[in-house]
Length: 250
Ligand code: AMP
Image (tube, rainbow, N blue to C red; front, top):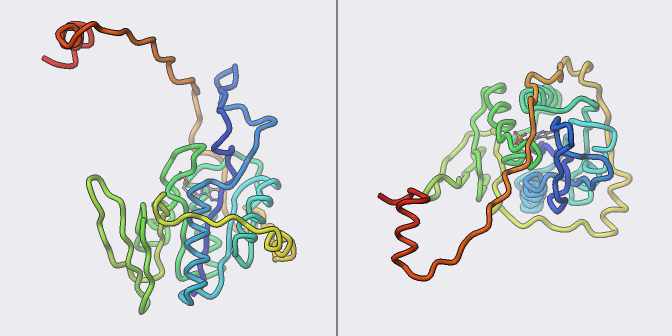
């Protein structure tokens, strides 16, 4: 079975995000970029499935600028076999990315697609779901455990208040949640080996996909700063304040 993983280049999760002064977005100049953390989990799971004998090849795909090649190389160093960059300088949005992934699925015919549950830059949590719908495939979103056997996939999903276990016929789309695994670090020898692995660059036009954004961001704002707290002398004052000032208890 071939596995396709989507990896997005995003602002590194350690970076303190600054909103641009004109409120059109967040500052990306001179900022560190890395692989979206949920995509590291997706790639790790694919590598583990390959190591267990359940998969034979892992293809990683990024939709983004030339610099997204670095993200793909990281995935190759973690254990993916081949990479494809759908190159665009446009801002990518879930529907466009899902259409590009659908076109790659048509070429590659994977048995399983694993994407992250959400990209930490746009927080959309839509691409995997949209891809499954476009393909007409089943989906296991927010997976915290995956097992493949006899052409079927068992996925344990994190749902409100508990876990749900579902069986999916393959091919299917899975989105990786935080507790699925702990991704490995790429070792130096593997980083060196990754430089020689194949990385194909395709234009969206060649896939017949239009990546023009369908949504316009009107405004981005910092969250409001929290006002300072006060110390209360006793429980009675606290209850009175909760009742009369905060109005959170009747
Ligand atoms: P989102 O729907 O934007 O929150 O993204 C969910 C997942 O879709 C991400 O974790 C990635 O696996 C995948 N994805 C989204 N955008 C891209 C992109 N530009 N390139 C590759 N994968 C992407």
